[in-house]
Image (cartoon, rainbow over all chains, first blue to last red; front, side, top):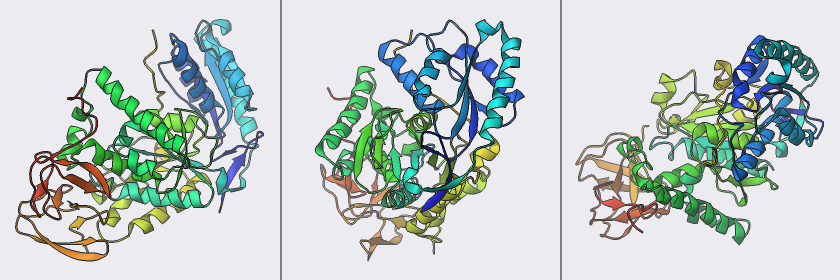
Length: 385
Length: 96
């Protein structure tokens, strides 16, 4: 199975051809946004990071920013900084240069203020756009595709319709040689046996138990009972009884294939097939991490409905019930609620999702893209001062 | 045809209502391709669970073929299964 992708100089493949204007520090966020607004066709993000990070957190933020900026969905990136920050454009440029990524850098203090930086940024961004326009799509084998799976605003039906249907699509993709990321470690607590029974080696099972234990320990250290928020009050009202039940419904998104590797947040998998990425359950944070890990398309299930998108990767939204699909039709791409209406089987919807993944990877816009949803958030390890 | 309840794995001892169900309703569910009839002892809200067989206190509650918790009271076939008679075994912030 092929899709139509953009082959980059380093051999990686993009499903989009974005020019990204990226602030490496919050102080450059507005300037990056001004440049992006002035040059239609570019995309920008805002975030609160770039300064005051200690040790491991610094490395973690750099890895995430570098993974995002060197992503194959990005044809070129304009890195914008202030000048006195910890994470400078030069630092990120040094990282992404290793991947052969096309970049330009700009600092507000060196340029002499907002207006001068925006003026120069407009010229640089327009230049990157012109270069990007020369890239074209070509047939690419599906083994080059990494999809990220996610769920948010879940309801009790998510684990019955949308998640198992995405699991069917995930299994097809893995069978065809592609890669699927499963994340949201808090929603793996209680699903270790289900996941641990199908691992490539014992070390992976051990690692799965380590990351869920670490999440349980984190809640305990904070002096909270994780069960007061997981399942959430809304989840419980909807019929979800325990953390385990929520987790077992959530991990269905990854399908039923063998777990090949467990990677850290924003770490690139060395294997193909089903990969677990350790990370939090925050929707935008997990999307950002999976994209930084290399996911070129995200598939996102929802029961209560969410508009969430991502700045450089398409997000395909799958609803668990027909009611929310009808109410939020401008946000949702595929309705798995048909399963309950007796109109389609899980397998049929799963195959439909797989078809949609190929079309979206080949250029079809998702609802989130049409509406301009660009939510972006980096996981914080809590080591910033 | 609209479904009433779903059973996800042959080992499950609970089913999930996919529309609101009334006490006294006789519900057809499919367990491992076999049709099973359950008479509900209580009303079951949309998305909530009921027992497919009698479950003893301390017995595991099985959904997706996996343990989702254990019964804190004995539960009769057709009874509502939720927070009042089930406790999770993980993330126990109340235990050292």
